[in-house]
Amino acid sequence: MPDKKIELDDRLKMLCKLYEQKIPFNKVLGLKVESLKMEDVRVKFEMKDAFIGNYVQGILHGGVISAVLDTTGGLTASLGVLQKMKGHTAEEIGKSWIKIGTIDLRIDYLRPGKGNYFVATGSIMRAGRRVSVTRMELYNDQNVLIAVGTGTYIVG
Image (cartoon, rainbow, N blue to C red; front, side, top):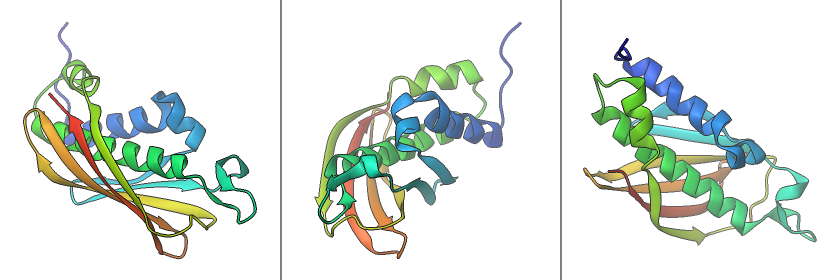
């Protein structure tokens, strides 16, 4: 029996489940998708002792910042792919998602990563057939901008 075509809400739930539950590293980071819309992608995570890069100041490690922004960019690019897959089956969508990968990533660290939790946001700058470019930002619990990034992702 062929796989049935799934609606947008179900595709969004699949994408959220993939990023929160299926990718082991995202589980280590404790990433939670707060919003998953074309104009509003938000990912939240709590500060943990294991994430400290400067133990004297107790600030977030730059590698954690980079990983979260890359993941947020990948999620944003995945959302762009998802929007183009209206009327496709869950299997077809899943096959397209496994092709997504980072081509280039630039992170600018603006302030020390101090906070109890952090929120990363993402937006699509360009969604092409083969390559998508995203913009990501990381804020702390005081809504202070900690870092920004631009990511280029292979999507097809």
